Length: 315
Image 1 (cartoon, rainbow, N blue to C red):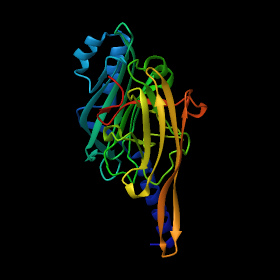
Image 2 (cartoon, rainbow, N blue to C red):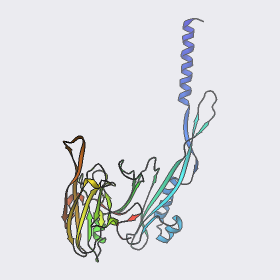
Image 3 (cartoon, rainbow, N blue to C red):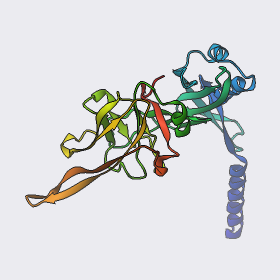
Image 4 (spheres, one colour):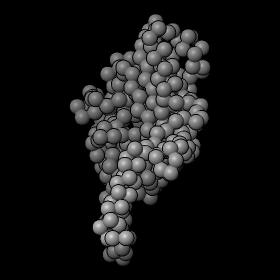
């Protein structure tokens, strides 16, 4: 066969294959699911459009996962799975669809609901998380926010971090107790900078220990509320899991119904000793400021109400 004719046939074959590839395509279809973003959104919109009372929301969504009568807020959690089929088709060799099952994904759906003083739905938001493959849940309704995020790489637990947060403005207006003093502990920018999460603890009470900074983003961290009895107390700041690195502490006195702000500014100092230049010695150092008015750098931060199954403030 002459070379020019052979070259023309080859060019024609390439052209046909290119056209077939261009006309070929793919799409996905749901093959099975027990919870989807569309279903969650529909439930949320129904609760907001009516609007429903709290009892009606419970009837539709079931018992809330997190609930506070004092703050008039609830979080619903629905777990399930979701699987799609990738359907491909083309002209060659036959124009037949070829379904390919994709891996099943475990999903967690969240619905955040806030209520008015009359018990009527005020706002609703939804989100779906694919933890542990891709944890991501950021919901916000009015003064409330709920988040789920991955723990720090050096954290002692690989459990997703979850938190319910209220705005500082609302907490300052309604969150103050009359039978105890209220202390808000916060970090500004890199005030809690360390190679591991910073723990705070009130006096010698281990039940008050809370990690700081793990739930922060963009240099802003939620404030941690403490409600000790009126009198003299000590705040201890340490590095999580590093007792030998020492601690920074400060003493303060608070009165009933008083609101105070404690601001740790700490960092880990590493020094090299002559006897072992290849293994630095680490030590926590810094200060804790005590103020009676909210520092400007944390005024827009929220207050942590609940985190990973634990209420930090009264329900």
